[in-house]
Length: 159
Image 1 (spheres, rainbow, N blue to C red):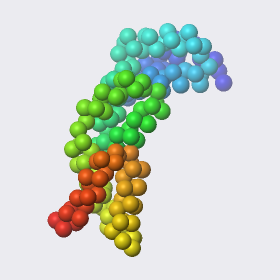
Image 2: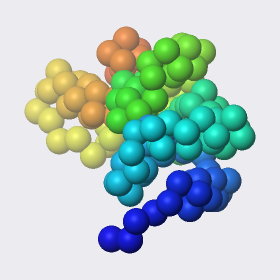
Image 3: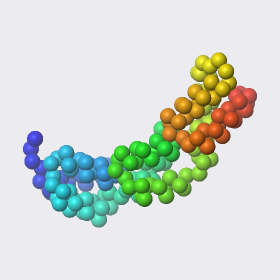
């Protein structure tokens, strides 16, 4: 692998960040893979942050919005994904706290409704447990899941 200079790394990362939002953790990992030393990484990150190319708060806000809206993820799964991307809890915690339970419920209800039709279960209890397990795998909190599963019978009667 060819050695990459500090200036080349800065140009590549600036171009990458100009195209899409990325976290500081992603940029640091990329530089580590390129074999840059920690002091070079720190200088590049300082320049990217000063140039507003990397902003973890902005990244987190877009990430949370997109994952709820398009991927239909719950809070727990989003938290885990942000942690994996190297975003600090103090940055994404307040952003996730701003999202009301009603927004998660609005996302989860249609998922529960469509899943309800495909579940094979002998009893209502077994069906509820399968729905809860499904919703937990999507990262939703138990309190949100309980509200949706308890109301699932009402949803099906509306059809």
